[in-house]
Image 1 (tube, helix red, strand yellow):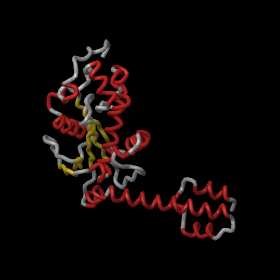
Image 2 (cartoon, rainbow, N blue to C red):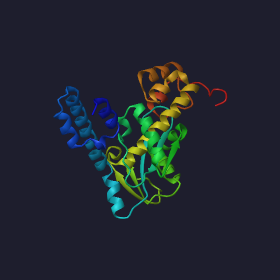
Image 3 (spheres, rainbow, N blue to C red):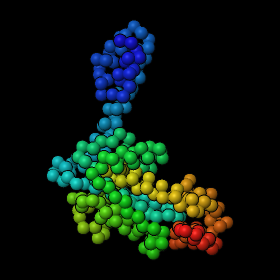
Image 4 (cartoon, rainbow, N blue to C red):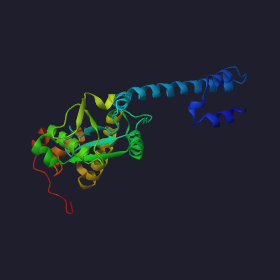
Length: 263
């Protein structure tokens, strides 16, 4: 078979890379075929390793479903540390048997990978929702309680109530359903990892919108975190209306600007 035909046939379908195919390519007198055997074998090892990783990542959901629990919500929040913008949480219910290549904690992904996974998660989810707590409410409640509120709002906004919520690192008061706290859940549980991606992408897009109103602080680049650029702008211009006034660097900054017209 011509090498180009082999490349075409196996370019996308790694499941068709069998031991017999690899053996035939390794025994082929053509140097190009033997080189292709090495590349295809490496790809098959990556595919097998990813399937094994995803099987472990969704072990909690698979165990719950083996006991008859069907609607399982993964819940996570983002935006606890920034000096500006909201705390955002997401809740997502994935269908049984879901496996999404590359799914992992949002903090371990590039922005491009998060965007791709965000699209796939939303297209495959049974339902998902986002909870949002703005900076004024963060100041009033404190950021820890704001995170709890955002997660409760996300779960309560789902189209149908889940049977259980798997929550990254804590329990949510006033949430009237079974909960399971999973420390480090965004790295251990598939549905929590999916929620972390939805929340992160939603918040980053929102901070990009805020950057158009408050361009001095670099929100499009720092998402409200206290980078050198952001802290320098705070010291020169003072805080904007979307800053968290209870956070030290904001509290110590000079008086800030008024709200732009139309906001």
